[in-house]
Image 1 (cartoon, rainbow, N blue to C red):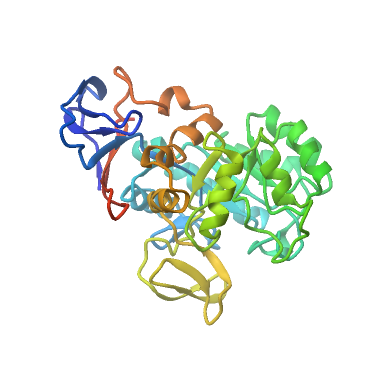
Image 2: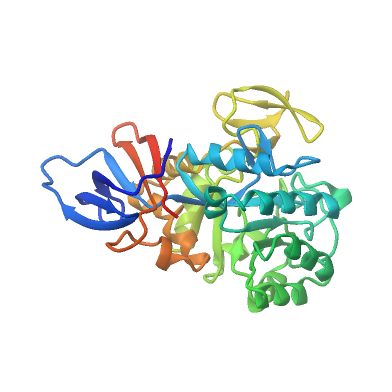
Length: 383
C-alpha cells in the first residue's frame, strides 16, 4: 500500500542507524527524529523508498509490448508502489526504432501526472546497441540489434524530453566509444551489458565514461573462458557499479555472495529487471511469442524447459535474498536498493540518509529477524 500524507508519526528503527526512533512528519517534511528506549527493538523499519534502475514491466503491464500506452505505464508504477519501490527507471529493450520511440512517448505522457512523474526518475534504454551473439544478446531480438546511431538516440531523447538517463550497450560494437563519449557529455549514465567485450574493450569503455555493469553475470554465454572473460574484467574494475538480479534464479546464491564481496557494498546495486509477469499468479502465459511458465517460486522460464525467460522479482524480495545469500545485515542490503543507486544517479543529497528538514519520502516495512522475511511495505511519498 502507498500513502501520501502531510503529517504523520512513525515509530520504528532507522535503516541508517538501526536505532529505535519516533519520526514526526509535518507539512511534508521530516520535522523531528527522537530516539526511543531500546528495550525491545521494533519490527518496523524506516527507510528511503527503494529505487529500481531496471524494470521492464509489472503486474501484467509490459513496457516492451508492440504497443504501450500511458495507462500501462501508470498502472505499472502504481502496482510497483505496492511492493515498496518508490522510484524507478522504466526500461525499454531492443526493438524496432519506432516501437521503442512509441514506448518512450508513453512513459513521457504518463509522467505528466504528478504522482507518476515523481516516481519515474528517468528512462533506461537497454539496447539496441548490443552484441548480436547468442548468449550475450540474451532475449533481445537479433533482427533489431544494430550499431550505435546518435541521430536515432537524439530522436528518442527529444521524445523523452530529456528523461533518458541510463543507456546499456556493448562496448565492442562498431562506433561504441565515440557514442559513449556523447552519452556521457549529455549526462546519460552508460552501462556495459549484453557484451562479448575483451579486457581492452571494457577498459576503453571505462576510460571514456562507462560507470555501470548491467545485470552482471547474466546475458552471457552458457560456457565462457575461465580467464580472462568479460565477467571477471568487470568485477575487477573498481570504478564500475554492478547491478545484480538477486532472485535465486538468474544468479546462484554463492555467485551473488562472491560478486558482492568482489565489488563491495559501496558498488553493488540491486535491480529487479522484472518483466510484466512479475506480481502475477503462477501459471502459463504467452510472452515474446513463446509459451512461458511462472512458477510458484517466481521463476519465469520457457514452458517445459529450464531456460529463463525473464525476471519476476520484486526489489524488496531481492533485499531479503541478499541478506540470506550473503549473511549481511538488513540495513546493508537495503542500502543496495536506496543509497547506492542514489550515489550512481547523483541523487544522494535528496535520497540518501534520513535527516530532519528533508522531504518525508519514506518506506516502512516489517522485518521478521527469525524468518528473514519482509512484510507490509508502505510508501509515504510527498514529492
